[in-house]
Image (tube, rainbow, N blue to C red; front, side):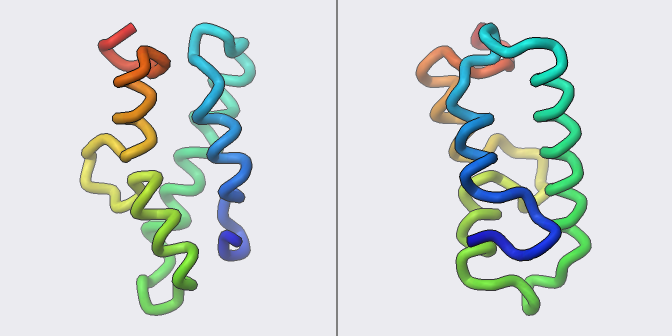
Length: 87
């Protein structure tokens, strides 16, 4: 379960598993906005106040804010579903 004021893990997984070329412009904009908002919330929340599950979720989704691809992005890119240079 994600911490309050954070994007739910289910929403993250749902957004990540739908190929970018099947998303509408509105969906892509919503994903971008919610991803940036969750990343900002991750940056503002001290690690000491995060639940264990939130720390794990942040690690998996790449919310460490070090500009590297998340494990989810790497998996999507490997399957050809990413929105990056592999499409």
